[in-house]
Image 1 (cartoon, rainbow over the protein chains, first blue to last red):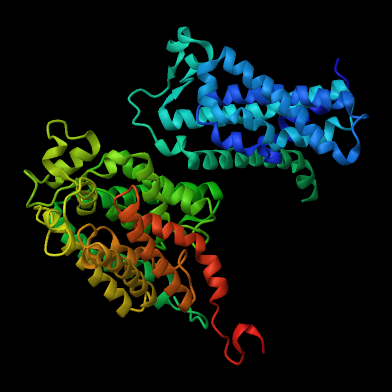
Image 2 (image 1 turned 90 degrees about the horizontal axis):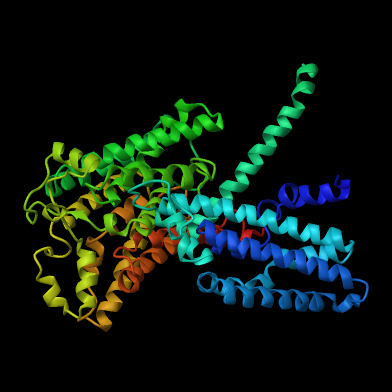
Length: 225
Length: 342
């Protein structure tokens, strides 16, 4: 079984401290790349990979880094890992690399990566740090994919369009037409759709939490009456 | 809307003000029906019905009583303004999407009447022209140009089932602003463009008369003290001055001021859209700055932008500046020196 610490880390990353919906960090890729599921999933997984690796690397050397220069050191470590992802994508998923373009190198500047390194990995053990990076990354990926799916369905009426870019030409038929003969709602694909969609997701999360809270509070309300 | 003191009475309740605004739109709607066919009645009806539906739905969701908020008529004004800003005879879902953006996103998500930052009808217009540029530029042709103007029944058929046998070319045409834009891009001279059959004595043939009817309705609103003179005058002066300067610099490329005043949504915007008491500046000096800026931006967007008409974008952009403008134009309080100090 997982220790209580590990379970807390997983719960925090995926839900309670979710980067996309609660910390509102990493907005640049969340808003820019969530225009369809394939882009969102690829960039989300790339970010999660970088986060797990950078958290692990920093936790390993955390006692060797002089405190005043820690931020530049963190950034260098993150940048090296992002370069690895960038080159790997260029080599093995070139069409996807072309679509995601500048947003892969930009993972370096994504606040959530540095935020987890600074807030978590520089203080905790290596295994916990890797878990935290992966879970925060997957939490962000979850938001990206949900937002990407909503925007793709509303904007284009399909799911998984562009999957052949990630998995090669054999996947071209995997695109799922959700609504046939859909005229398309371009605004959902364009930046305003990202803001409206993310706002709606945050609102839905708050409604859910409010429902839970009121359900938990109900017995005491009844007795007090 | 004026500064305090406020007198609350039946005479200036929200409902009465909104009904007056709707009444002032009637001459324009009649002219529109007469010159462009009864399609506008269909879109007004649809927008109104969708607006009430969305408003009721959100009010129910928010647990707010329906009757006082639905009967204040504000949502019908939004619906009417959007219907007048959209092409007629478009598919029904265009009006549905538009009213969703206007009522749900631009108005109710911000907290309902009085809370919204942006003019709901213009948010909807912007969302639609960004999303459906093709449908948003197919306007019903004026009766004298169309091979066939759809009757009321045919209009319903077109809106709900696409009409089937009738080709859109038979009853639609580009607007004057659109024509101007494409012809100017092709390098045609002003005189040549003005000779096209769609142009009237100053603006578009037909649409200039509708615009003048909006002017008449707007003057009724002024006379009834629903609006003050500041916004319409500053908006129109902003348009005329900007267009005049551009025309003065390059008369062979840019249209004159009168054309800009009488085409597109300039007059509708001046009296009915820019004057929205919720989203416009509220201090007298602020109103002048706000509206002049909107007028200036309208002509700039029309001339150099990618979309034919700039009223919607200009008003949305200046809506953003309203809190800033209001903060710096607070009038002197009686008994105080300027700047609020005693």
